[in-house]
Length: 267
Image 1 (spheres, rainbow, N blue to C red):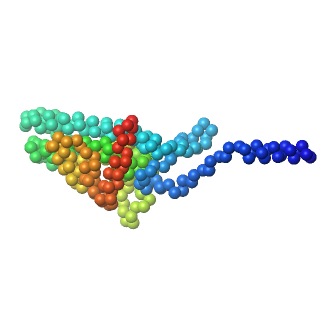
Image 2: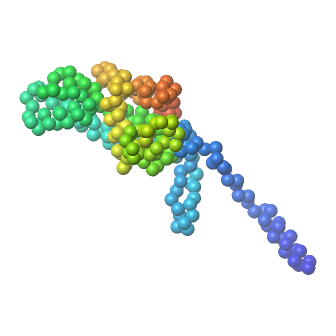
């Protein structure tokens, strides 16, 4: 009897001395997938070999770096493609009016793609309007908007539809229906096959849609002054991107200011 008591006492002593397991922090207060947050939530990892789903808790800096590392090369690749096209446009503008049939076909394709009217051969006004649209979006601006619109890549639309910029579509079945869509609204959040397609559509949207004329005007002014395309300045042209208006512009600038250093080293 005394031996049994001694063994139980020894087991209790060992258990009391063992290191305590830290408490699990509840994620119930984390933003929902569709809510924009400056602070990214934990990244989910695929099931392990034991078929157990585990959550990898990463520090905020690492999570942001991973997000920027995903999108930065996509934005840079699209901007490089646009710059190549811009060089072709400039070359044909300087060439004059002696265009081959193949060149005219390209010019008509650009006019259609960038939503510009063209009757007959292009004139100087056409070239000016086209060059205003065929231009890049600063990396910092694109990354900040992606972080804002996709809740740092955690939103349902970015995870399931590769939509990192909150882009809408308006035909039934073209995307995913938002959970908080207003009564009577029919828009959906567009689904893309790849994240790269989302980046291309986003930049094209800024380069062609009427509501972003001020952004293109600021960019043109900077080009004419041979100044860098400043993301903080161009952010003021995003007033119409969200119904939040000036508050949205302020939030984008805040993300740029707080994360500019990380954007430069990610990749």
